[in-house]
Image (cartoon, rainbow, N blue to C red):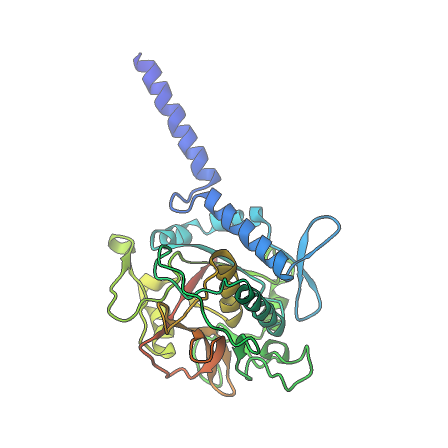
Length: 340
């Protein structure tokens, strides 16, 4: 009997070790990851971001005219396992929402896709305000059907020829700057980043994890996730983009996190709208506006700023200075799944 118990224990230990090797993240079951992956793949296909090839593969066209295949689930899982130490820690802090971003796609076109989907939802009376909790009652938003999405001209200039309107195509937008100086900011253009991604499994795309609750808390909320040395206080509104960037770069509890880009915000808006019928960052309701320090125009020292604007009845991809501060504006951060 003793030998049988010992043998059973060895078998269980071996099975647990095998499960750990296959999928090491207890906080984020692989089934949930796959569910989110398939949902976003379907959304991008229905929205026209993805084109289906004869072999069944899906791809997106970048600003350089090249075709970029949608990341494979197997490659995402592999990359996550390779970055286990970082991701496991962040998952315990609440980062369990997958976001796949068609980064290489022209910003102008991505914004146009979101505009059309917002219009479609309004036509179906399925354009709802941001909810604090899923059980909150539905509140239908009003919409300016002539301009569902405001686009600051620094990001997309409608006075320029179609296809040449975006700051990403023009090379005036720099991604993931290390500071907001006009010179030596450390950011890169989209063309430079696509060049660096050549040959990689995620070329043309970025894959990230966000917090499950995407609503940015207001100042004083004092919400903490994780325990002990892994505890992390959720970032709250009412700081400047300069302060948020410094916090991400220096405070250990936010290590490996980065602010979003314009492309991240548009993609998240689209995915969340399609999955829940809700707009994100409805600061006039139960949300908060979101600074997007991952997109920076050095000539004017503007970074991205995304929100739902009730007064104008539209979503807004605006520009804001690094020193700007608002009690209803904050930062949503992300963690890349790729090991740095």
